[in-house]
Length: 225
Image 1 (cartoon, helix red, strand yellow):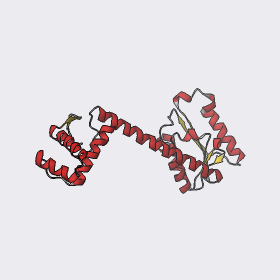
Image 2 (cartoon, helix red, strand yellow):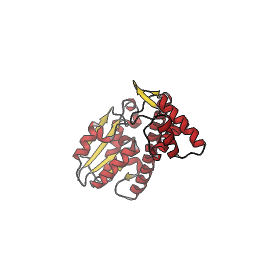
Image 3 (cartoon, one colour):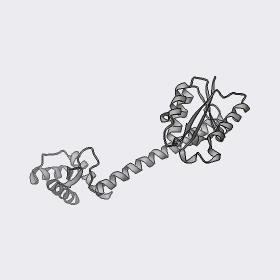
Image 4 (cartoon, helix red, strand yellow):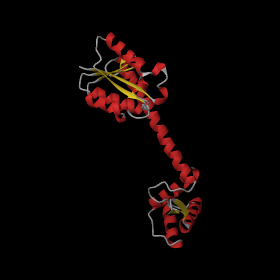
């Protein structure tokens, strides 16, 4: 068994004594002494943002590569090792699988092998899911904004538009088809009826009813956004 300390400060935090590397070293060393352990080495990230996942940081990579089953990592605070809940959750699960202990002093100690572990994992799972939801919302908002600006978001060309130099330019024939389709739906016509009307009136290839429904649904959703 080997015991390692992990310390990190970002550039903006280096002048803050409460988060300094020396303070973290002292806290980790004191905690290890209370456990009857000797710290075998420190992995120190100086001037590395917490937004960078642990496995992508220089010292984080070295530490994870060096760990063996039975080893222990001590860090002064949760946010010294992780900023993202998703990163924390994934790393903690990997350490548990590898039988490596992780002790976070601000959380009361061992977060991979005792009762507090379940609580930490439950909280991090909820926070990680919230982070993923927020990311999805931001992506959706960005796509809606681009669509409102008639910018092409990639993927399949939306029916009713041509893509020209990265912008969506209305296709007159397809726009006429959309308008005709809406009118026919308002009159109670089926999607099959609309497909026939597009084929006969606007010289489209004959589409199946599901394709017509999908086209009209997407057009309606785009207008609502």
